[in-house]
Length: 343
Image (cartoon, rainbow, N blue to C red; front, top):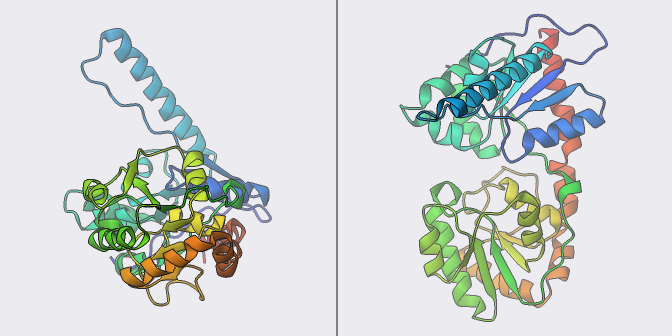
């Protein structure tokens, strides 16, 4: 499946950019692109509603209400698609929405687990493979996905995840020293390496520093056993405030900057993580990197003066320059124009 997808047929009239409907979302990437695209006077919209569950076994009255809700969802979806020139589907696992009528050309945006894991699962491969074959263009959101996405579609393009600076709170470390582990505890986020790093940090900083993480992922119980206080998953606003109140954040150990890592860097919190993939990001990247022992020692120094460490790293400026929403919008608008020009 190394060929390119079909070209877009009916181009938008000269002088008018194509109308684009973003379907679903991942880490609010679609919402951010649409928000800043509309600020640039681009006719982009989002449809992020999921269809109502069928609800077998419901009483007749409830079943009728559920069917009515499903019909309403179908009508809103169809109206949005008919008003669009082009669709933008977030996640390879969501291609079902563009396989049913009405049809429009679509861009498929891969966000991680869909192409890194689900694509290789025989039970889930068919739907993702169909999307890769029929998409007018394929995008991927982190540089490590290139090896997977471009093996399936040679023309797949990297669109850096956009970070909305207006959502980021100010960096205000709490009175008590606190180090936050920002990611879920599982293999996709570094798994065993993340646990090794947690153990090294716990041993290095001592009991006066509170270590916190999310109660999320297959390895969460093991993380708790290392001395990490686990908190329940939280709404985005609270999550960002949680990051902003830390003295330091430990990013995932998978060699990339995920959205949570980028948000922490954008806030200005000093971020420590295992080595990033070589050539993945324009350097110097404003995060602390090294072995578990080296990172533990660097974090001890950060705890002495977190604002000074933040100023030295310069994370917010780097994120704005390389992951600001405006460059991503410009890149995406160019892709849409190219598709609609038939080139």
